Image 1 (cartoon, rainbow, N blue to C red):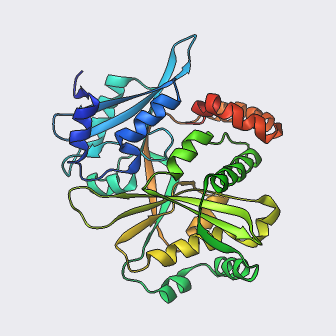
Image 2: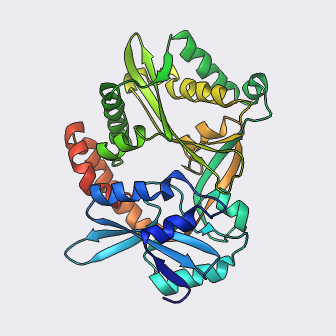
Length: 339
């Protein structure tokens, strides 16, 4: 298949341990769970030019009757891209080879760490991430680097008496998912299905922190950990998703959860990745306030057109009118259109 050699799962797994970088989302266990959960999704693995990089795609069947499909690297995550086996790649040539072999209906969002290793592709998205480096900083230094309004939100949350702790049981996990689904409904966006959140939260590489107010769970945040291979020191903590009770939206819930997580990482050789956010959005303003380093997220392939954006606004409006229990039931069938 030209410059791409298809791999089976054992072959991919063997090469995965030799890459210069990988994430939680590249694991075979994660892919097998998703394939079992979603019949419209199948993972494929490739070796590029014999020794340059490996690449994983999720092949998503968007319409069974017409056979329409798209390739995403990686679905259910804002990052994908080729995993380098050595420290160089010709991006223009790689991009041409991708379209030649797989067609245009493809999307690859490249993890900033991969761009750091291999150099930056020319094609960027409207997404960026913020990274906090905490190893050689004191709590006071980090506190003073925060935006003034953000520090006030944290003080306010403490004054409200919020308590932050890890989740303890399935009932608390279910409560967090209810808050998450309700938040996504307000944003008129399809939430990840319950089995997916359950799998992530129960994985040893994850930590779910909850915020409680007078014994009631009012918010939470899920963090995922992944380390660099080849014995490289340190690793990443990925601030993957969060949710809060809208009734307590002025309590600074997300601010206090993230601050408590940061304090627990001070002095460790860990990079806190605050995750992707659209440039100029409220989410980006929130993440920028933590004083991290901005990293653009480069993308190869599918770009959303203005026409598709307008049509999606109508769908999102209707979605926002549905009750939560219907949204949770429809999510496993419709989530592929969000990827």
